[in-house]
Length: 342
Image (cartoon, rainbow, N blue to C red):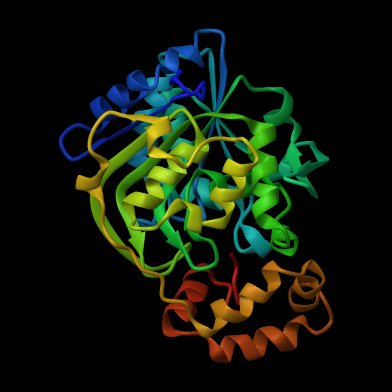
């Protein structure tokens, strides 16, 4: 505790170039992971599989996950890795598992693999900073685990500036059409964090993503990681490493205001000087991005665009307005009629 009575969050930042597994172990030890995991614990890992196969800087590295799973398997009684189906029927979780070699890795390590979209779920409504919102989450995550671990990528996001642990949790919503629920997203992400209570965040920065995100951009070899015991602290540090002020990233600021953590460096114990890892990332938004941004403010408009009789026509027009990168992403997923998804 610090003199002001606030909790001191712990965050580890380190290089992954020489020995990834050793760096992961040092990071976990630094944040006192023994506090959250023992031989009787059930641990759940949520990677970022926002694409059906691994893309550097876009999805969590399979090698990174293997190392982390091996460490956890030696500590916890039960380890589960899971993801939901891609948004807007873009791809299934099973396709993402196959594309990231998760079936083989989890089998070899002895870890369970689950598609969150196939599990029983529950809708919970509550107030976050005076805003009433509701989210749907699998009962497994609400009732069946002892430690939730978020394993996002260090990357920018065309809609939310960055996508780190808080935004990564959006993929826990099992409905593939969660893209119709983006209104009040910043409050919904805070509610999800309140419910899931992430104990550990491990940010994969072996490759980061610049220029756009979340599904394409410019991968940057950064060879680093962040391990933290708090989502807000982890995301604040990750944002600063990418050159963004955390209080300017609305969903991180809202989570901090809701009492889920602190943005202030003086409230964090960091093992090293994070500034030596800092770079200046940028976001290049396209016309489709700017148009899609309107859907984040109205679920009714999102339904009109993405789930109505007008949808085929809107998608046809959007397809003609796509940038070359957006067309390439749609082609890679075999989903040329999808204008997003985010």
